[in-house]
Image (cartoon, rainbow, N blue to C red; front, side, top):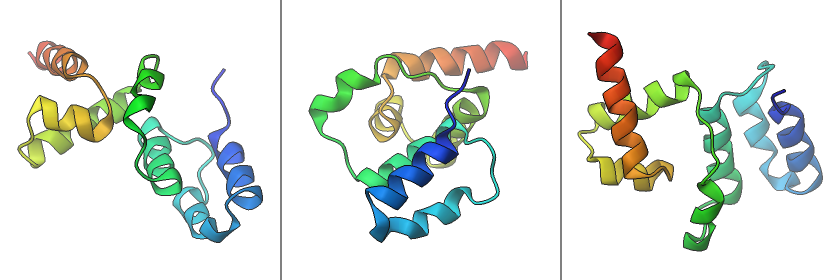
Length: 107
């Protein structure tokens, strides 16, 4: 079962960060948030994370829509795997694995 991120972020913003209520517009009308939506809201709500928080990224799961978004962002901006991994806090090896999987499915 997937968490109800809309409810979680609505409550979080209303009760803990009321000055950032404009962020509620990002998911207005959406019933479910994609992984990229969650990443975007986290970045806007909490800002840049500490380097020590990288350990918390180990068990992240990405849906296909988010993987496609990350890989297309890399391609459009001519970024290296290292640059994309730092931007989205994903390991370089994961980026490589996704690219290999994408290449195999397009053949």
